Image 1: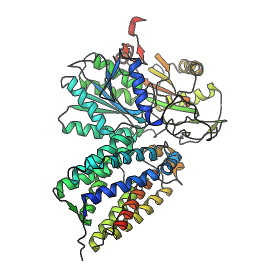
Image 2: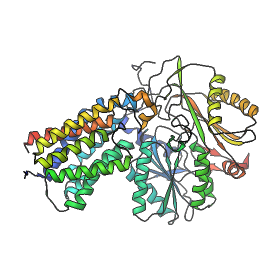
Image 3: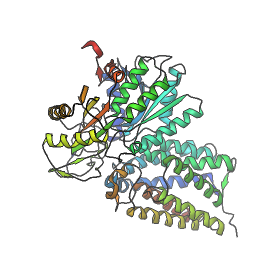
Image 4: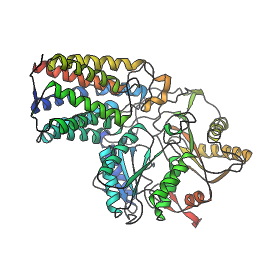
Length: 345
Length: 221
C-alpha cells in the first residue's frame, strides 16, 4: 500500500468529525442514549438513584467501542475525546460529577483503558473528583499480551478483552451490587483476561488522511495496538487463517495458563476492515483448538467491537469464567451497537 | 549580581501568542514526527490547543497571571486531549500552581519567579506522566532547560540570555531523544525500533522554549 493513496471516506470537514459522529450516533438511537451539554453521552432512561453509575472516557474512532455500547447492562456516562485521543481530564471529571449527582451520591465506578493518555487524563479526573468530595474509584483495564511480558501484566494495553469487564461491571451495577463488590470482581476478571491482535493492513487516520503505519501487502503483523501502532516484532509473511489462528491462540492460551476443563469467555474482535466471513473462518479453527485442549467456550462474541477504522485484522480475547461470570455475561444489555438478549433466546 | 528586569502580564500574553504561532507553524512537522513512532496526531492536536488558548488570551487574561495560566492549561487539556493535552496543559497549570502558592498578587515576574514556575511545572508533569529523564519524552527537553534557567538566575542573567540558553538545552535534549528507546506512550510498543526517531513531545518543548527565547530577544528584556 502506498502512502500516496487518496483517502476515500464519508467525511465532511476533519474538524467536524467528533461533532457529527456524536450527533449522528445519538440521533439514530434517541430511545437509548442522549447528549448532556454538547459532549457527554448518557442513557435516555438513566439507571436512577441508588445504583452504581459507570463512567468511561476515551478517544473516538474505535466504534462501536464504547461510545455506541453505552446503555442498559453496560455503562452510564461516556466521555468521548478526539480521534484515537482520550478526552481531557477536566471533561472526564464532568462525567464523574454528573454520575455522582444523578445517582443520588451513590459511589461511582470509573473504568480506564490502559493507554498513556487515558491513564493520565483518567487519574487527573479522579483526583479532581476526589478533591470535590465525590466517592469514585477506578479500575485500569489491561489485557494485550504483546505490549508487556508475563509478570508485568499491569503494563499491558487495554484492548478487546476490556469488553468482558464492561459487560460484567455493567450487569452487576444494573443488579444493584455495591461498588466495592463490582471493583473486586472486575479486577479479578481483568487479571485473567488475555488478548493478542493481528493486522493485515493499516488504516488511514481520518483527520489527516495518512496511513497509521506501513506494512507491505505481502506481510502481516502480530501485536499491533488498537491504534494500529506497529508491533514490536516486525512483519511476517502472510499465512493461512488456520496458521495465524494457531499462532495467536497458542500464545493467548499459554500466557493466560488456560488449561483443560477451563470455561472461558471468548471474543474475536474485528478491527474494522475484516469481514465477518473471515472472522467465522478464524473461529472455526479456534473451536477446533478448544476441543483439542478441552477448553470450554461460553457464548463467544464474534463481532467488530474495538475497531481501528478500516484496519484489517482481528484480536482474540479470553478470560476465565466461573458460574457467576457466565450468568453476568448472559444477562441482558441494550445499547446502540451491542445487545444481549439474556435468556430470551 | 542580580537583574531587576521583570515581565508584565501583557508580556506574558504576547509571549503565549508567539508560542502558539510557532506551534501552529510546525504542526505538519510535529505530526510527521509522530507518524514515525506514534499515531500521527501530535502536531494537529497541539496546534488546535495552542490556537484555542491564543484566541482566548483576552478572556483568560482578564484576571491575574495565575488565572490566565490555569485557564490556559485547562484549555489545552480540553482541546488537545490525550496524553499530550494533559502534559502540555500541566506545563501551564504547574506554573499557575507556583504562582498561586508563592507569588499571588504579583503583577510582574522576575526571571527567578519564572524559573520557580517552570520548576513546579516540571515537577507536576513528572508526577502526572510518571516519566523521568532518559525515557524519550518531553521531560528530556524540559528538565535540562529548567536546570539551565536555574543556573542563569544565580548568574543574574537577562531574560533574553537565560531563555536563549534554556532553548539551546531544550533543543539538545530533544535531539538526544533520537538515540533513546521509548518506555512511555504509544512509542513504547515499538521497543528498540523507536531508536533513530526523536520524541515529538520533546521537539514541541524545544519549539516552545525557542519561541520564548525569540520573544525575549525581540522585546530586549
